[in-house]
Length: 582
Ligand code: HEM
Image (cartoon, rainbow, N blue to C red):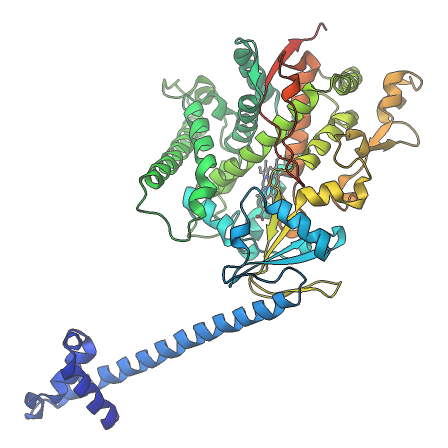
């Protein structure tokens, strides 16, 4: 029986409050107290009502306990964050909103640089009453943290989810992405060992063709070409080479690039801004990209089935590029088919991972290609040295379309050094969502704190880079080989200039504690080996036939804008390709 006093108080409440008559509880109580209930023959009805009232009571109690437990948990977490944060050195919070107002996107690295000088290798900064940012600069600590802190900030997951739907890559929680990361990494690394290399001759030819087309105007915008190169390499890897011949490939590229410009902006809203028209325009672009992705995959599947099962020569469909229509086995060798065959999480959308990889891969790879172009264009001596490597490698190559990349140590060093000086993102960010992070030095970072590494500071001020750390010097990644290089041994020309240069060996950049353009540890970039080999192949093929120059008059513009502490991106410039007389 429900306690009488509770019933009485409920009854008086029910009669005094008009809205209570609308609730189930109000209805039940009213009917219990009405004179009709005293009539005979309503025992079963009464029992039912009592049961319902009991259940409702229990439900309310459980809800109350759950909400209280949730709030207590939040308060405990907050208290731990405050206590943990107070033990980390850093400026005291000046207002309720912390230092949030002092910081804009552009000057965060500058602010952190000043704070590190004042407070040491680990610095805290309150960005609000519930947001603690911890920045780390010490090389050893950074690597330890990156190995231990497995989660990412929720905004990363929100960006990808808003644009491409639920996926199992680029999500904050490590457990949710671990399997998919491993699969993708294994698939990408498998290509390193394939004879055709990570970037096939067909892909290189397609890029060279585009470059010649763009050159018809006299010069090429370095950003436009870099973006196209990155998109072509990623597109061919993810969807297969047929993608390059698809009639809608240009629309796909434009759409992806437009989405990438706005993706982080829309994800930065705490409440999705449904009321803004521009947001719906952005969502429209995302939907169109999903539709195009699905359309291409379905075309491939149809084509594949026709070829394999019906044993019929595929017809050329005018809506599809010719290379797609005639390619005999499209599905087995691309990432899409692997992706569709291995859905770990039923709630994820089928193409979300694919579009996520295209998005991240294109943005980061394009920016690295752009930097390399400008480094090469402004350094003719470096280009000549790399060209010597290419000539040696070509001499050693058995087949016309295959170059010994292993011999091109200076080319690899140029890629490493470009990535070091201008990493894709100025901050590496991690967090430990559920547990405090204990570091060997005794520092404890409370769960939920945003942990960042100002990559540019670590890579430019780190002890491992010596005094010329802000200079572009690819030779820092080279050291002399004891016995000479493979090319020197094979050519038997140990005394000439070329073989002396090629007797350099490439340092494993993992030996550098402060090399972080691809991150490090549990959430490090899974595409780094693939992308470095891919870019080496592309640049080797390009530089073998062309010299890269800055357009006349642009030479003076090649100064990266310096903020007080950190380098910003190189500007986009017009470059010119001059054919070599081979
Ligand atoms: C120049 C090109 C690239 C750069 C500079 C780059 C850089 C990065 C960085 C800094 C991270 C975060 C690492 C960390 O937090 O420790 C990352 C993550 C990742 N990268 Fe890349 N990346 C590049 C290209 C690629 C490509 C081509 C692919 C795939 C084809 C790829 C796949 C991934 C994936 C899947 C992650 C997410 C890892 C995770 O959240 O667990 N990346 N990348």
